[in-house]
Image (cartoon, rainbow, N blue to C red; front, side):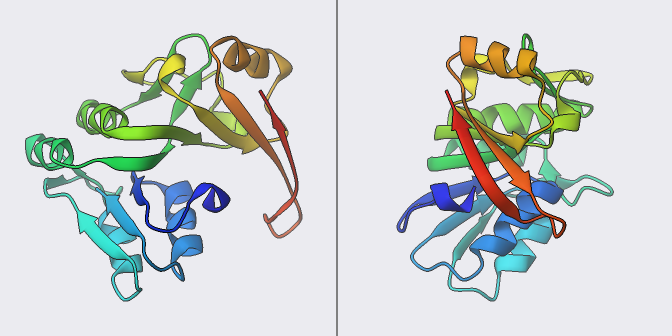
Length: 182
């Protein structure tokens, strides 16, 4: 994911463990703006050279994310070059979903203000559906996942024009070999 980020860009990170890992990997970047609704990501980047914009909103228990009308309105005033969106569920025929209605609304606004939408998720998220739909598959430009994604899910994404990057992780969970398909 970090390889997709260019100097001078505005990067939008939603809340989650995967996006937190991206934030840590971006920590030494310069000339970058990170927009987030995740309190822990903002705290992680606060002492770096990165300009951090934290949305307002109501804090969700256990997720460190800010949701609600204030978060949505703040995001609508901004524009992002790239969004990294962690997902709870990704049905490749129906789209991305989350169990929290307020989180889904904030995520939809994030997608709407972003030039490029990248879903970052391990293969266990595919075939799962949660309560609230965020966006259909064709709203996503790129998916980064691991090699356990099924051929059917890959084909469904391809049919929607979604680019897929499959990372083969070593024992330390670091990418060793990356294969990209279209």
